[in-house]
Length: 144
Image 1: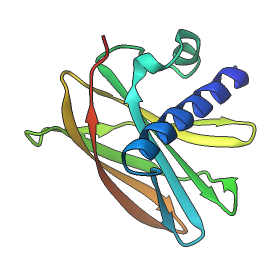
Image 2: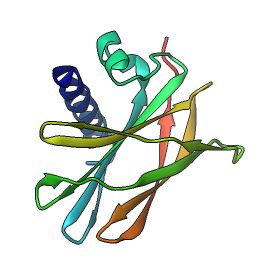
Image 3: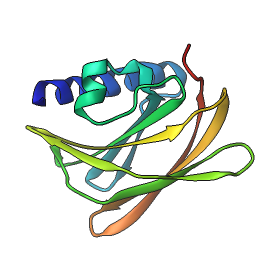
Image 4: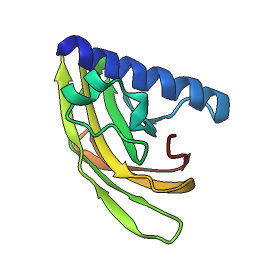
């Protein structure tokens, strides 16, 4: 199980790093000595085994957001919540769950992706005793 979760984290960060570097650079926010990394993708990028191990729905119409918080080079346990809005300002709360394994802690949530569109994400993360907010837009494409 730990090996599958490690694969999920590496796959998510690798996919997002390649896509983000190609589009706008690395997806991260720095708050003092703490860095919040984040990525979004359609859940069909997950292998069936990884989706099962993390209890995620693997579907062309389900997106995933992955958030990790690093302080002084080590993963941090924190609070993460947020919302995702579509172009009509319909808002969906993101229900994050913490995934912990050796050497990694990350937070994942799923959200519906019915059609190609740009979504606005607002993520609240506990950092150094206070809540920091990250907002970003991401164009999403349902899978085939």
